Length: 153
Image (tube, rainbow, N blue to C red; front, side, top):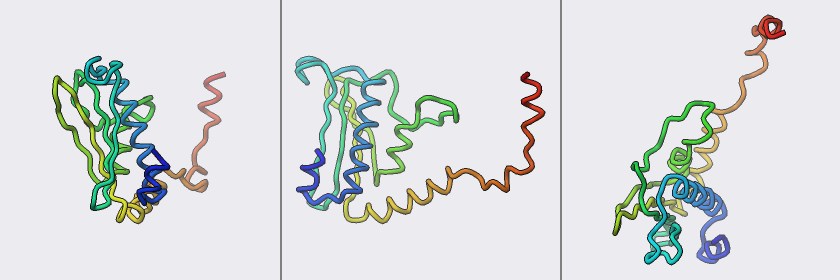
């Protein structure tokens, strides 16, 4: 996939995001979706595809046999082991959605525009870094963990 996208003129930052997006889509399809029927995919799995259109938009999509719920972004707790995939996709993509297909198939598609993506992605990453950065050490000075640790002994 990477080499074919490079040949198509897709910038490396877009390719990196597309690979992460594809990984999330495939993980979600395997975890939440049913396999495609044997007559559709040949082996009962999921189907992944990508294309670059005339406008320079990269579309990545994954199709599975549908699941018990619709793909929607979740609001996981801080300690949750999952539930962040579509939020990651929303942060990286210019647009995404869900399309119903033949025999219950569900396709999640994601568009990343190669011409405007690099600058917007840099801004999103900078914003993300500022939101998840550790607080300054001075902000932790008033915390005293010794009492809590004494209770554990």
